[in-house]
Image 1: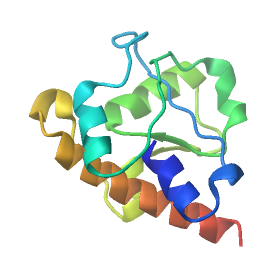
Image 2 (image 1 turned 180 degrees about the vertical axis):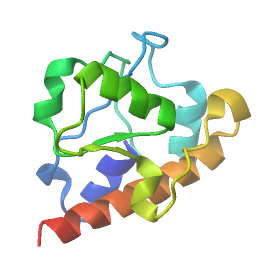
Image 3 (image 1 turned 90 degrees about the vertical axis):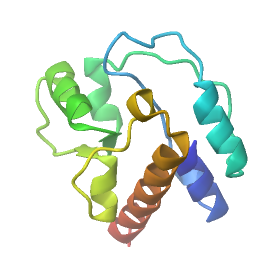
Length: 134
């Protein structure tokens, strides 16, 4: 939702297909967490209903960028896809020059810290994609 908002605010919303999927079965079928909803509302980010689904191996070829929040998801994606021959899998904060994981509110309870990480990462990702398309 954050990346979609950034792209739309720059007049590029229609240029992207953005999707979200889980790498484990933990949250399959669950809607957006209430803490995430609250952070989006507080920061003026519109959102649509979304229910967690599992990423599938055949999706690798459908995306130019496969972005995840942490090292655990990188490992899960490599297992699901079998490998990453095109180097598409990256952690979100790599796009703003950081190697660390996005703060996980499941452990911290701090959805604002997570939102800040996601906003910085998505802004960096948008800049990277914009540069690559020139």
